Image (cartoon, rainbow, N blue to C red; front, side, top):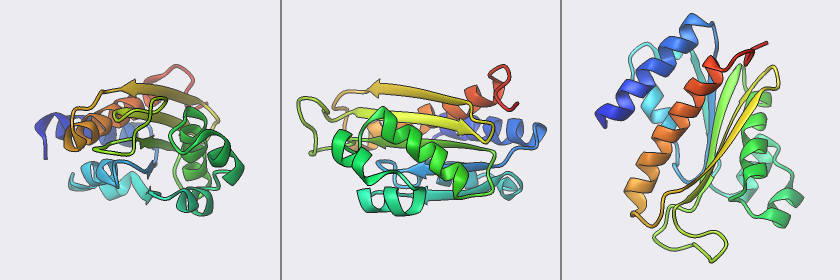
Length: 168
């Protein structure tokens, strides 16, 4: 694993332990890489609850409760869809916090409105606190877009856990 990702994963897990929080992930374009980064760390099972790989629109709806009409209206790569994924992961798990990722990793699949490298992120807490972020990485190649997305997702989890009143 990339040492940068490993350090972030260790930090996220430690902060979750210190705050007695459990984590879930909801991933599309990263295909479970955030969950893999967290579970690559020995002992992560005390705070990592589960990961959802919801690559298809149908999976986003059925597993996370993302409204089908939201995806039809906005497309799967949208900040509202990312937020619905993060909130859905909380509802479909025992987690206190979650992070979601949906984007266009390429090499194809992009459009003028949603180019390759556009990735939407959201983090949510059981208390209702949320953070959303849009990144336009550019067409850096699929592996690099996915690597940067994992880093961003881990950073978003860390931010949510350290955000004032995030868990209350």
